[in-house]
Image 1: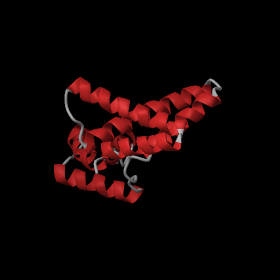
Image 2 (image 1 turned 180 degrees about the vertical axis):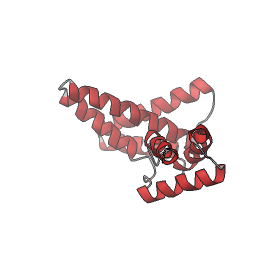
Image 3 (image 1 turned 90 degrees about the vertical axis):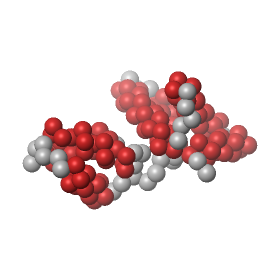
Length: 148
């Protein structure tokens, strides 16, 4: 079963259970997916779906900080709930050790010597860590490796 099918099944389940909050969050996911499919005139595969979900989480985390700074705990709670729902569709995150191994392997495979080769390393890592690690944090770790 594809990720999109799983999300659609969960939407039906939320409708039957009359879980309005979860249903709303799932509809947001499907709307974002549909928007990307229409814009690019393609059918998204699971890897592309993960990219959409990661982008949605990033947007919600930014909104969450803004709401908390403004003292809007009601909106912050809703953003937190949406983040939880979206994260439930992502694969299990990589552990620190797995991430370090992945970075070391990518550097070895690409033969990277300095920060100038970081693009090659990140391209290789992105394929393997999509949806399982925050790519901004991975980028910072790779950069730290080169600055040693």
